[in-house]
Amino acid sequence: MSEFTHLNKNGEPAIVDIGGKNVTKRKAVAQAIISLPNNVLEALQKDDFQTKKGSVFQIAIIAGIMGAKKTSELIPLCHPIGLDNCNLQIELNNQNDIVIQCTASIEAKTGVEMEALTGASVAALTIYDMCKALSHDIVIKEIKLIEKTGGKNDFRRA
Image (tube, rainbow, N blue to C red; front, side):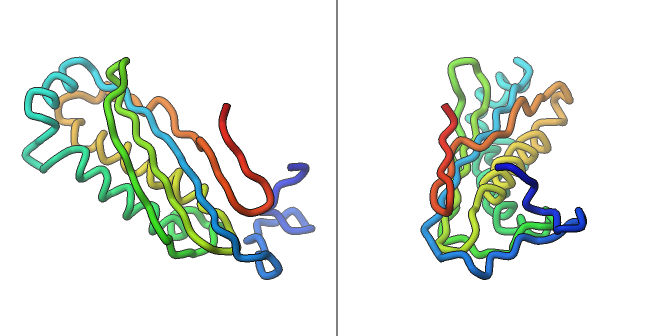
């Protein structure tokens, strides 16, 4: 990319004109990683990730889907789009980090990277919210795009 797409010729914020683009199948996968202090992780594992508020992972999945669906309301220059699908997977990795993957897809004139990133972000924030009573030492370590397909350019993180 050689220029910012959300600026008009005068350098002012603008939504990208997608009127001339073709409808294609588009998919994006985003990931968020959360590090929990040992006391929080032990408490969650002891109760099979259940809290008084409910299942931490199940509620985070629902929140992530809701967040992905509302992306254009949160990110000012995103096009409002429907999603054909949105799927979140949450698991514990070998370093005892929580790994969230959000996959969003649609047949449209614009991609779903922001929807996938928003879904992963909202799920991570939901886990933080549900666990903060035990510690504020929770760290959302990263949120990143893993891959996107459809449109002009495909991307896959190496």
